[in-house]
Length: 140
Image 1: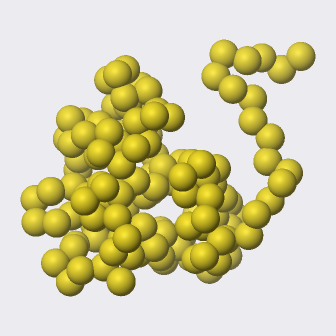
Image 2: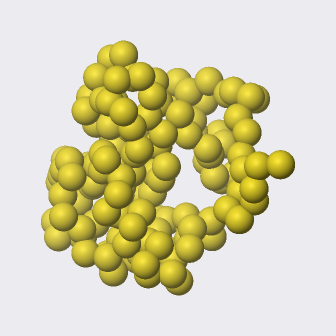
């Protein structure tokens, strides 16, 4: 499990540079527009549930969720700094997200390829019925 010195916070104020640095350090930068500061700022500010993990003053993890707090929640980002991976921090971020959502709210996510083995280990079930309409694509 996670180290005792890791502190978890709900909706903590995060500096944009720290936010982007965590994405870069966690490999999520490969799939996120980290070079577009305005998009990253909006991602950070418009999530309606954010749980962060801190090692002292260092931001080492984040769970960024979009939700109605009643039925469904989309875990848009789960990022843990490479230096802090394999310590249970990702699991704790998800647990704290679930606690904030309540027991009736389902949690849905799209996995990064490198995390495909992680989610089933912690209890997620695979759903082959997800569909994506990419940025810039239009309904026909």
